[in-house]
Each structure stands twice: as structure tokens, then as C-alpha cells.
Amino acid sequence: MVNISNYDSSVNDAYAKGQQNAEEVNKTLRGLATGSDFVSTQTQVLDTSAKPPAVVSLVGTNQQSSWATVTPPPGNNSQHSFSSHIAPTLEADRPRIEAMVKQNPTREGATILHMTDEVQLNNKMVDEVTARTNEFRKA
Image (cartoon, rainbow, N blue to C red):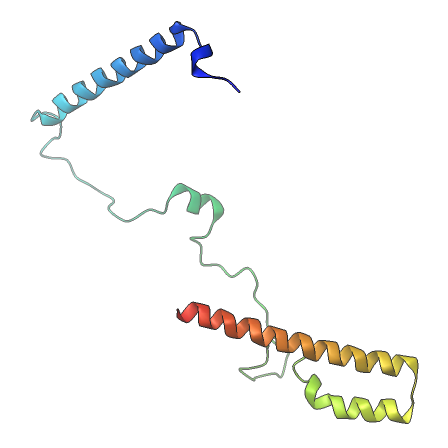
């Protein structure tokens, strides 16, 4: 680690000279600003609209373009066609899946039932996260 005491006195002198030059420039500008010749009476401001900061312009967050537009499948006119659940209709299909597995018990059937249990558990977790997020937004 470099300590200030390890620097030459020339560094300190250069810093002091730079500060002195900056003060002189500021004094000169203040003197010009108080004079009547600094701003012309005929000056017009042509553009007074607010401009976004440079970072916003670089990142592009000020643009209102949609980068993730998803179109619904043809023939689907429902407003609630998309859900945050992994498989929204799985609970309604569960009895039919169980009946099919009982008719033909295999290892794959047991795996499918286990998968449906896990998906339902994940759907409940998604509901919990959504509820907590909504609570946070309201607060």
C-alpha cells in the first residue's frame, strides 16, 4: 500500500499549483458572469425538453420497445391464457393420470406421478413467491 508520506514534495507542489490555477479560472469565470456582456439579450433557448442521462441512453432503458413479445397460439382468445405456474392444468388432470397408472402400473407411471407431485409443489411455491412479491409491492 502506498502512503502519502512516501511521495516527493514535488507531487504536493504540483497539486497546489493545480488548485491555484483552478481557483484563478473560477474567479475569471465569476467575473465574466457578473458582467453584462456575458449573456446576450438576444439569446434564444431552442431546446428545453428533458434529456435522459447518458447511462440511460447507453443501456437503452428509455426505449419503450418490447423485447419479449409472446403471441398466443391461434384460436386462443382467452385473456388469462398464460400463467406463472409450471403446469396450470395439472391438478385437473391428476385423477386421469392416476387412473391410467392404476390400469397399467409401471415404473414410468410411478415416475410420472412423482413428477406431477413435484410440479404441484413447485406451483405452490410460485404462488407463495407471487403473494410475497405482491405484498412487498403494496408496502
